[in-house]
Length: 368
Image 1 (cartoon, rainbow, N blue to C red):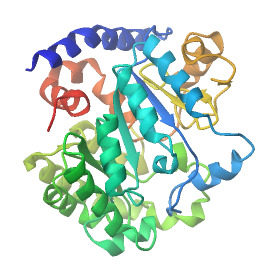
Image 2 (cartoon, rainbow, N blue to C red):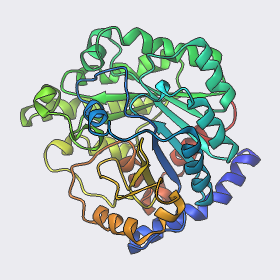
Image 3 (cartoon, helix red, strand yellow):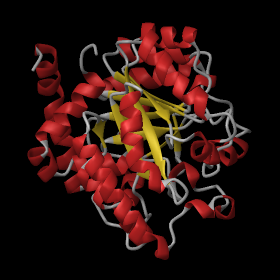
């Protein structure tokens, strides 16, 4: 282990332990490991399953946080011991100040993870992201076949997403690159192929998630994407494909979704598995206009325009929302709160040390 990584583990390991303990006890934590920054609801795409377009219209009356306001969010996160900032949208590449936000978070000693559809990536932007110090960029790519990807994301979106990965690998060589892949009824038979395709693109990670109806998709009219969801008659085929995918991932050099997450994918469409969710303990969602909520499935009751993030985190009002997380019955199986919560189970922290260590290195490690 590199000395810098050992220092990172020593500095932050006890904070993670504190968060896990406070979640088990149901009390407010002192520290905030991960901040999810949804910096815009605007998007250049209209993906079949995504409700961001509806959110864009719903929040159109509110003005997005300025660069300075986002800087204040990051500064407050530093006071809470935040280790990782995950930036998404909408499409974050639409924000002209994106690299400034990344640079500011890096100057506060935080890892920065950027999620994008990739279609707006250019050589210049790849270089600027590299210079800003972005740790990880994840690109949405849903199939090794253009037609299947574009069924979800829209016409002429496959080649630009693949090109974004190429540009990042060439012009941002120190940045780790991942793929976010959505499993739907339309593309599930090509999921195992995605692993080999991802390797051919030279990425470091590929994450898989099942199509869902909550989080940022909750305002989407289900008739607009119901053909992507799995019906009871599809579940035996889905189970077989997930097993094939799991085997392909196990043979791959790539970092990927945890076995526990894979095991719960099929159940999402039948009897979803329960787990102790750490939303509001290990992570918080800050929306484009400043609302703060435990996760993206909830509406915030406080805003960073009213109080700094660290004061909100410690407030009585926000802790009431944490109690809603304890009683949440949402059918949730996503690669943010679900995967994070599965990784924070005591058995996983102890028994999956190697995979957890590789993930830490992915988000915070040295040059690749």
